[in-house]
Image 1 (cartoon, one colour):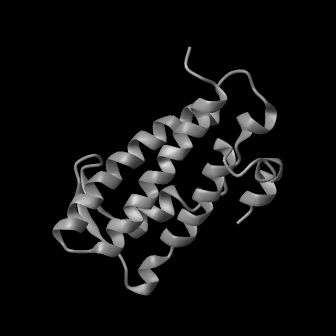
Image 2 (cartoon, one colour):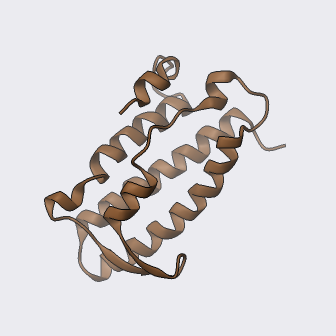
Length: 138
């Protein structure tokens, strides 16, 4: 994981800074969510968002297993960057998938996945806040 190296100046900010809060949450979320199927923890559900069967483990690899770089914060861009615009679209999609997953995990009495879903949703809220704190809506 190269998140700390890519965003080094942001990890030096105050612990309450929106960028640092998001990055720390993302690292924690990725560590807790990716690879959990190896521990026998997973959840399958029918996604109306994607019109197919999904699993939490495949979701985690697809949407959390990457190194993020907060380019807008690092470059002090005055506008949303392309990656920030893409992130806002992705966050909405991720939230929809996680709400579906949580509903099925609750029905299936899978509290471990419910807790992981809540962590993902919390991290997505921090990501949106991180982007909006940098370039407030006009």
